[in-house]
Image 1 (cartoon, rainbow, N blue to C red):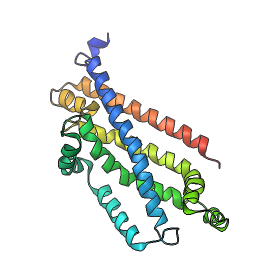
Image 2: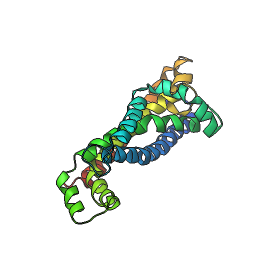
Image 3: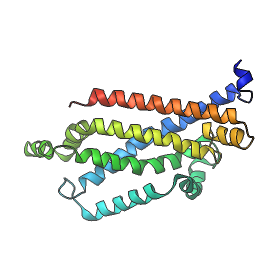
Image 4: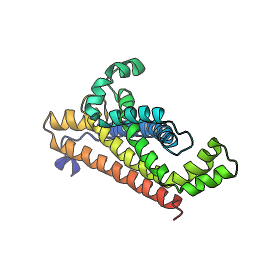
Length: 222
């Protein structure tokens, strides 16, 4: 019955490309969470009135973040081909998509981290400083725990954006469901392949959103 309505869908290939999409998304999100959190922390700490206040450093990092946030992802992939080839040895395949995914999503997440840190009550930070807490103690015991609901909410949004990035990367040979939808669905005019690939991408997005909302609700003390 399914074969009758979806004659062009090869479920084995569909499963393999789904795993490739999950692989690209999973590796990228972990790297983006680490790199984006570090960038966001530096942006926050070097801003006016904070622990590492430094106008020059803040301006440079802010400019870099803004530049990479502004470059359309499909163009970023092309610009990073030399770096990708150097790191991975190829510009084709799911591993080749990782540098672009990480570099493209980290600045976006860094801004969300900075926003989350700004929402922390300044009094909590000042109380920790008055008790002699070091900068690193404040980061680990105050900033990160207090902002964790916002950080999880932010990485959820970023993960969903990364899924869409993997679809775009797939269109130029990075593998995954985007590659399947473009090469088999669009170029061969197999609309059922495009439909199923799209449905699976939507399911991945819904699952990510559900998990992110669940964790955020558990961490939110309000």
